[in-house]
Image (cartoon, rainbow, N blue to C red; front, side):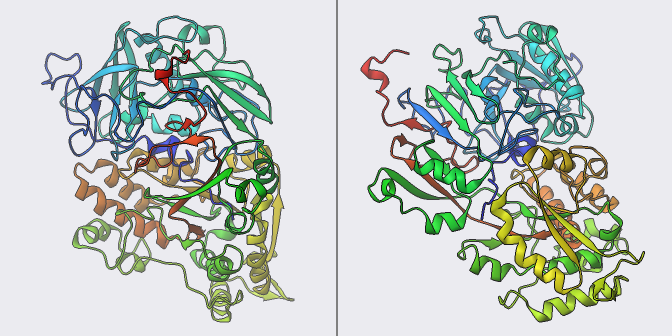
Length: 625
């Protein structure tokens, strides 16, 4: 079974830069008390690394430079696809953006992988924050340059943030809605102003956004899908590529940021290449034939049965299973409640009862997975047991407006007998459907409007087909006409963006300190926003209000209680049929790589960022850079 990566920007592009409640400091306001400039920013506590730190603890600062890293996509952001690309603009809604384009740009600050939310200076050397937390003054590094040698200035940063807010992908514009303006005081000084009550993760999200060349986009429309190579300033530039097949990125060997503390030990490969396959089985064959060198395995069947090819048995390919301590989030079949047939909660619960996870895990996935139940799975934000007094106080205003179970034990999916057709659960599903007015007529389940109850599963890759079939069979037992629609990735993304589906698989997760990043997934506004990740169409005043409580929390304790209360309400809504997650990264790679012995807790494997070529010569050998 292919399990989408936790590093997907369904998790990453929205909030994985880390949410941050920044302690007040000041920007250009004589009336506002200010703290001094800082080399970084963090949430709910102090920074781990001092101003004079040399490198992150988890990197190898002496990693050799050189060699090739090639892989297939295992994460995606904004308009990117796992299977294809037809655009080099990866920050808008149009087109399918190429994997890896983020490596060609720099941002104001960079995330630390061993802290839950800290960021340190990249293109910006320091940040000063006003006492009310609404004005941020960034001092730019004078050495920052675009790839054509032109200086990267605060004016470029201000232009970039403004155009991303107005013309970027909807997920970007939603997260930047509380950024009021970005202004360049001069070439070295950027001032960003935020709205009152902005989410704690809005400033770090802004600080993580790519900086574009204002001069370049004066002559090129930003909002258009294009195969023109944009002017970047990052550690890599676009190399060879062929649309829909592969793209390579070449290391900028005289890159201005290479010796910054946040970059030492990183970006070690001379070439990073992404290959694209439409089918996971075909992609695996490509790996065994050394068409690409690194693979994170998301298919338990392949992991358990097919790693016996000659290169593996001869030791030329290595396998590692590394712990994944990051929040795993939610994965499942999301139910489109915008459609009348799914608006009754009892119908959605019936769909849940018909899925036999225990049989699927045992028979198809080699018992490799654990059932997911919460959008905050594998974190302390997930609700458990009865509500605490603090949670109850947050929930009480909604009594009578949300299901009563919200005030009891949080919902967990039913456990089947593992037979594949648990009669008790199917009888329960049938009763729920009858109670909702979905009765049987001539052997078919009918909606209250007298139409046949049909469910179409939208899918864009064949590896998931086996997991749908037993589920579809159980739905058929209930009289539901369920079908599987396999389409290409371009059509699938277009239908998802337009919310043109019944049920579709997705996975997302949040950082350990979520804030504004919740809105694209759960808010009423996102439910009506094309291209958002509110696939289920959640539009609930209780969810909106509790989400604001999470965003407004000014202590870790308040954040935890508010998130758990929110979790209870979302889970009570039965908005998706929960699937599964794994607590480990399953890696396979040809024996030509090295990586640090201890990988960062909050950013996971970080390949290729902090890996290196075992075939490259150490820098001390005099290898040319």
